[in-house]
Length: 448
Image (cartoon, rainbow, N blue to C red; front, side, top):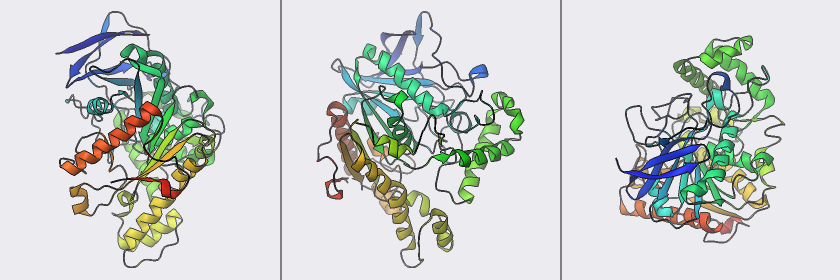
């Protein structure tokens, strides 16, 4: 094994590996394991360790919602982060911190399976190409990260997933200079629910000093529950998992498979009810999240780069049978007449309503500078399938890794990915994108 240099963090020494021109520090604890008495609590600092901690293998990801998730290694002891440092990088390099999406239910920075060393998000190539230090981290999801249990028992704290994110950012602020990064130049970037979490952080005073710039990819801007909505879903969840509201203490010891099933059941319920919000969306509780996050974020002076895919809705609409489209439109609050091109019209309306319009509203009204893009490219296999430029279709190109839904092994796709990394890197370095700040829809950069 080709070990990296040893780095001193505030909690102890760590040593990673060197691979393909990049130092990789995989599985650094940024908080104590959220288990036992610390389960369902806001994160607390990890215990210091003696000697050198070898951080050479990715952690497990947080407990998943399953269903469409491809994360195979998940668990409750998940609060770890990965640091990718390109060899030969100049000192005080910009830092980029990845917030994964997955409907607040799936995703993580860990291994794809128990038996594999492959990471779900291997960001080494991205770090080398962008000439930045890149950090990925886990935050709790589903039951442990976002379900509202506080109104039933004050020992079950609010919005643990958001506080995990802030704990990781605090660790980065305090330690990234030891890896060669500039702690005063931290860009957070995330997709879907990860981007929506960043919008929430932009409006939270507790997070004001934790990062400097933000890239928001296809944020589900309004996927947040009211207190009343969340309480109803909490009762439903407890019924799915077989517990009474007076039996919350048993949640600390409940098995992962039982959590998987209840997570899946709640997701199916929300879908059947026709709600476009994610089942485990964070709660606008008046305390942690004081009001609509998009409105609070507009007071931020931090630079943002925000964008959407041109046909976001295809990922959600294309599989709905034509006969069911009017009912789905009613659920989503659309006025819709079936006919020729019904799926296309429905998807475009969905895209505008849930992604494009609220994203551009933030860009127009935020106090800080903003740049807007629209991702329009389809890989040859996506185009051949007629799948559209759907939600998350940019990620394989951004991270230069083919997936089951997008093969990027052709010259044009490779170049589009390179172009995206160039833009993201320029924003991390300078807080600007290479086109005009956003004022009108004519100033949107198409990425194609």
